[in-house]
Image (cartoon, rainbow, N blue to C red; front, top):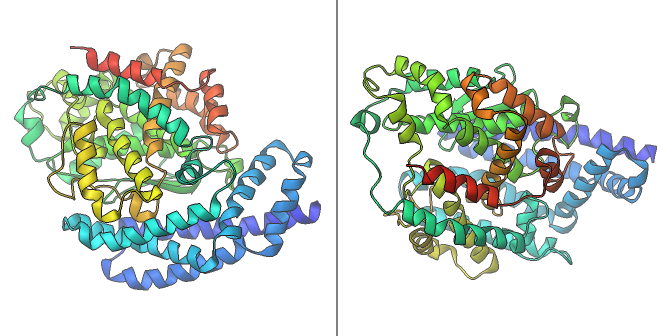
Length: 497
């Protein structure tokens, strides 16, 4: 056993280094790489992908994982979890042909670039061939990876949220469809309340927005020695260790709150990984236990903390200081009403708490149809508009604000979107549990976000990937997951006049 463990640890060390290189490549591409470097970078990435594949497919490494898996009882609990995960991931190497695996990685690396141009030009046709190839690969990979218990789209769903397949997601989304769709249509049937033109028509310079984002980083105790903030077309969090977890945001001079809540949202993700126990940095256990649990942290920080009146009672003065002309005579009460208004909107990342999960339902239904072969990529824009009208009550006028708005499919991430809605539901249950231990709004009012960070670290973050989502929800909330906390939270908040 010692021989196999040593082989595993030696190769793991190298794979982690390649993962870090991949992280830096992607970070640079999304934040500041010159556009002319695209083709050259792709060639270099292909070499890196090939070398990393050699490590993962090394017969000695694969044998080590298999032997360790056969002798799990001889391993400590944390290594046992790591080997179970790695044994499961070996399917990608064992069952998917090498050329297809590498071609797919190169395709998706290039895909984000093609998507960005298509989105900018409102030109789905230019992205369609790339997306068709991505979907074709994913459908083939699903066939390669199917098991007795995982079939079709379930294969992809399980990659992002262990234990969640179409059966579980259908039940979850059916609850939302029954409880929230009629409620949303009722609450949003009238035109949204009008607010001061200063909030909706002012110009908010980028530099002051950037300064406020950095102010928020301090408020939330985001450790700037372990992370940083840059801009990207689509805000994201990226990192490979508790000491290097970076975030991006975007600044729209005609929409101040977009950067505010993008920054807070991404900090929720980043604080999770920064608060992983550092002992996992040199293992495959660093990170969030699942995409749904990860999203629960970003949604809780963004919405339950960042949109609370108690938060803005403390921090609105700083915003006014940076935008004195734009926010003159705009009270904190009006600002809080503005950032918590429910309305039918087209863009997922700009959607309010109430309608957000319905945007995810649209994507879930589309992915099911694409992977099953019941929907062709060329028909996506039309089907997107139909489902948006059915669930959210509004239809996009063009593809930039419709099917092209998200980066995820360009990177091959299908099965990921449902975790966003699931994460929001997890967040409501976790927030409820936290309030059983202390008054969260009181902590916000006293500018004690560090108390909230300490609670999430102790109940969620420190475990990294050593617990399954179901195990972690039991640890954090002392009961199994229930979507009704989410439904009750939304109905209570948005029923208030």
